[in-house]
Image (cartoon, rainbow, N blue to C red; front, side, top):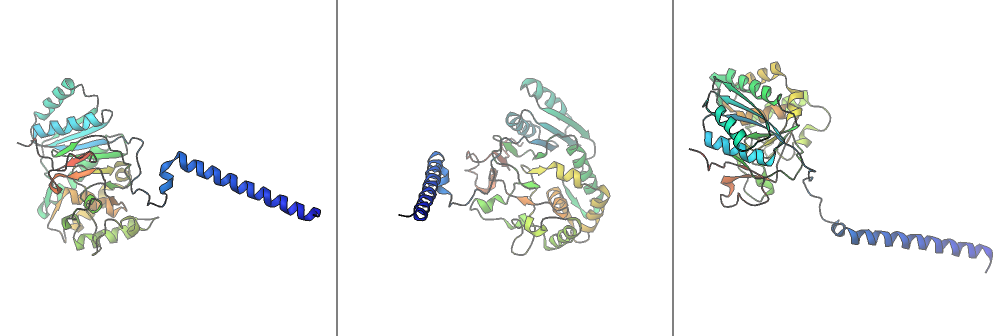
Length: 314
């Protein structure tokens, strides 16, 4: 055997040893991480959070018993969080109940409370468009008091069972769109009207940049290209996005425009519309549940935030 042939054979042996070594390493790594054996499965839709802290914003009125129970549930889950509460002309004794709650239950949260004698409500017919503008200003003012990026919208029918395990990944995270991922029938009322959707699309074209506007909202667009609305109680919103984009004059102009084709606006729809107009998106939270979807299933361990929980209403 000449020297050239010997060299080629030696080289082939070395290459073979290297390949075998790599294969052994890969095999051992698969044994140490069982989940890697199932790499052919689709990746999870939701990224697990290392532990996302949520602040809370809460518009209260007269349901004192429900208010206290909602607060207790949130404070137990998030004892380090900031909470901005505003009472819109409701029962003034809620302030005293808050003081007792804090001392009795040893609550450590930073709670900021304000009382406004003007009851703006949350439904705004055309003749009360100024109230819609005032409500958004008040909502923004209270968001400014908070500290963390992600903010939970509390209402008297929200029950927080535990901390969320998933990481919020949208401007509006959660709501009725979970029905799509939970094999439940999607309610059409979660979609904005055709006229509102056209209005939003126009604003997104003007005020959005970067990633495709429609791509960001692909989950929330239905077959008629209507945007989803999802800013009710139990929803997690991106506070930093809102405060960065907020423009009082511009939003006031938008509200006047909206009333040219909508006779009445609900605060849920108003919040959703503003986020969407500025290029935000809406995605479902798999840990969010509406009681009316299945009243017997709300206590399932996979759900952290429950909406339409009216056990403490009087």
